Length: 262
Image 1: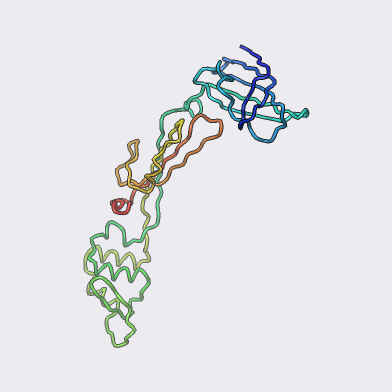
Image 2: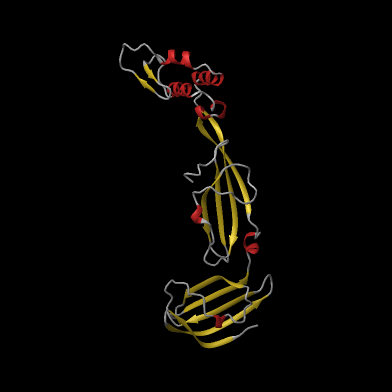
């Protein structure tokens, strides 16, 4: 079907812009497609015109969306405009209108003092082992309490870090950790998990207000304590749907995000 209309008024920003001609072409090759072409008797300013009034698209199916707009100036000082409409859904654009999920894994360096194997070491042993791991010399004179250690400058003090460790580091995990630190092992690699959902929506609807809070991701992720870490949304001007990627981060193995903080 082709139709031509002369001198159709196109109001824009309160002014009446006279359009000299309009043509509509309906193509059924791949999907319904409509094209509106018109000439505006004004110079091209670099701006793509807004979508026209409903009266210009009354012959289109309701499912048609504006997917492309183009404008260019002519030597005559007018503006040629082409608007392309197609019947599009998210499956047409992205291959699927179902959310997709992705599990990412990485390893990070963590202090060996935090390894689960050593979590039950008595507190005084941890104080001594941390001091040694931090680089305190074994012959350093120290002052020791149940929960802290201080370097002594008083030469009359006889307690050294080595003497304190021989006396107090007696548990099996504490002794093993002392051996590891002496061998130069101060860190280990720990797994970190992130879970991503990619979804498409005709409107920009996200739970952005919950970013930074404890949240259970959809899509059956691995067990663990999950934090909603990031939301990214993108859309081109002519696309019919938003692409929304949501990312959750899992707490370290054996731990949970603190509900008092998150």
